[in-house]
Length: 449
Image (cartoon, rainbow, N blue to C red):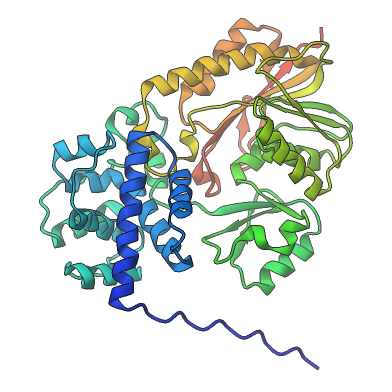
């Protein structure tokens, strides 16, 4: 007998105006909370939203979906939407003090939804509840052009520059700023890395009717766009068959060039996304020492390693320095703390609270980490430095300065796993290389003498 087809879930019932008003009241409250936190406290929006949901348990799954979509859209297109308000309001908002009313915030959300997803039902709901004008489905074009359509329909006189998604002072500091700004308009996918039992994983994804796309460059890498279920709840995740890891992060793991049987130090391992990938590439043979100053992150790494069935990982909490009597390693990975500018697409709006001082502090910290942990590389071994940063000061310039101080290290040339292009040892991974984060890596070889 053929199994009976799985019944499709019933379409959600439309919400009444009263429930819609309640939902949008929560959206406005969340918007004020997150905007003041991003601009005033310089905190990432994902943490602020998580805190908001913890403090507002009445939010159901539909409420959470609308609130998350709206808040992220507001921040994603803030560079356009800030032109909807007077200059003095922009200054106040971007210092964490929100001067606008409930209705004025509604205008910003209305335009944000339109910039992000012109057919979103929230546009119709807001138009009905707030008596905003109906907005047409636009012809293909940029998000900036949609922002202009919204401003015109709302009778807001303003000029919206196409390059406004990055603060003006940052545009000259970031290589290929135009491409970066364009990438910031698009929601990033969720990438996973399957490291065993691929067929079981794919069968479960298909059975759950999930839309996923394999990478055409990295085997085992798959992208999910706005999955309708939590991937962490899948049996394949619980069984340790796959890990969530961005495609660019996987590319960094590949350029490390690890081999089974080697001894590796991952000195800034955190929760171990790259550590787990390296252990898998080593086929569970050899040793990876995963170190970090945060012992709670290493505890999470230990749990993940057990779930993944990897036994070649050893964890070591440290104080930011190489510990005594350390035996040099074949390879040392320094995935250093950085500005996180390369993942602004995942935490939109952070560019508006970014400061020169933050960049300077990270550059100084990275230099210190390089000096402290480069002695851990044995002669003939490799030092791999990586960031999720857009800034040359944290990337090529940091490496150039290090090599000038340490003649025993030279860049090791190779090919970019995402593009196939030849690299001199410095790798830049960009959103255009595979709809991924912006990451940097440098591979350096230590003289055998």
